[in-house]
Image (cartoon, rainbow over all chains, first blue to last red; front, side, top):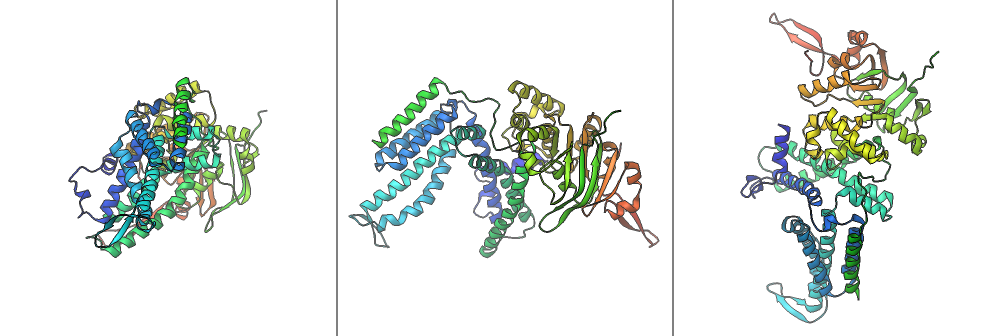
Length: 289
Length: 270
C-alpha cells in the first residue's frame, strides 16, 4: 500500500490527468509539482550512471573543464563565443545520453524566466538606435539594449546548462569527492552534501504536508486562502526542516561522518581524462582570445 | 578474579532543550552485554538518552562515560577515539528516513565502513553479508527513499550492523511497522544479540520481555524505576504513573462504569 501510494505521487501525471488541469486546486497542483521534482531528482542520479561520453570522464577533469567553459562564457563579450559554447554543451549532453528536452529544458525555462525578467528593462532603457517599437506601449527596443539582454540571457543559459551537465553526468558523491580533491573547503562540501541528502526528505515532508491539508479541505480555495496556505506551508516547512536537518546530520555523524567524502572506488586519472581536460581548456582559451 | 568494568556510567546527567528539560539528574550504570529496555511515554527523555549514549548530544550538567572515557565534544573530536567509538556504538533512529541518504541501498550500507576507512574488499564483503542477514539483497540497487517503511527499517538496521557494533541503540524499532515486520524485528533482536549490548527505547510493553533483561522506566526525564522486566511489567501503579498504561472506561450493560488498565500500542500474540 505504502509503495502504491508513493508511486501515485512520484509518477508524473499523464497528459489529460485531472491533477494537471487548470481546474485542479492549488494543493493538488503543489502535490504534483513536488512529485515531479522528486522524480526529476531521482532521474538525475540515473542519468549519471548511464554510459555516455561525460560519464566516462574522471570527475576532476570534468569539474575543471566545465568550470573553464563557464569562465569563458561569463568573461567573453562576444555572442558567437557564448553561442558556440552553448552548442558544444548541448552536443555533449546528447553524446552523454542526457535527456535534452526534459532535463535541460527545465533548466532553460527556469533561467529564461528568471534572467529574462532581469534583462527585460534593458531592452527599453539602454540608449541607442531603435530596432522596433512595442505596439500599444509605444516603447522602443534599442539595438544596444537587445544586445545586452541577449548577452545576459545567453550567458546565464550557457553557464546553467554547463552546471546542469556536470551534475547530471556525475554521481553526487563522486562530484563531492572531486570538489574536495580540488581543495574546495570541507564546510562548502558538507553543505552541498547535506543539501542533496536533505532534498528528498524535505520534498517528501512538503508532499505529506500538502496532502494532509488536501485531505481536510472541502471545496476550492479562493486567492486569499491560497496565499494564506502558501505562506503557512512555507513557515511550517522551515521550522520542521530545521529540526530535520539536525537529525540528518546526527545520523551522518553517528556513522562516523567527519566532513570528508569517501568512495568505494576512487577515481583514476587516465590519459583520456588528460586529453579531455586539455580539449576543454583549449576551447575556453580560444573563446577568450 | 575477573575485572568488572562498566560500559556506560551516567552521573547526575541533565540535558535541557531551550523549552524543556529532557533528562533530569539521571544516574545509570550499564554493563557490557546487557539488554535494556528504556520505557517511557512520549517526551519522557528516551530518545535524548539514546543520543547522549551515542555521543551525539552532550549533557548540560553531569557526565557520561563510555568504557572509562568521558563523552564530550572534545573527546569525540579526536580521530582515534571517535573511530573506535563509532565502530562500537550504533544508533538506529526512530524515523529511518533521516538515516537513509545515499543513492542506493548498497551505498547506504557501505557509508559507515567507508567513513571508518576500512579496506575496500572488506567493505564489499561485509555489506553483502549485512544485506543477506537482513534479507534485503534484492534491494541493493534500489533508492532507499523509494522503499516501504519496513524495508527502510531493515536497511537502516543493515547500515549499522555492517559495522558489527558492540552496542546497539534502538529508538522505537517497532514504531510504524506492520505486524509481520514488527515480529521480524523483535525476533532479530531476540536471537541475534550475542554479546552485544542492546538498549531499546520503546513504549511498546508487550515486546519488552522478548528484547530485554532489564527495564529502566523514565518519567518526565527522571529514572522512575530500574529492574527486571517481570517486576516492572507487573507494577501497575508504576506503569500508570509513567503513562505506560492507561485506564479505559467501560460502560457495562447494567449501566455501571468500570475502569481497567490497558496496554497502549499493539499487542503481540505468539
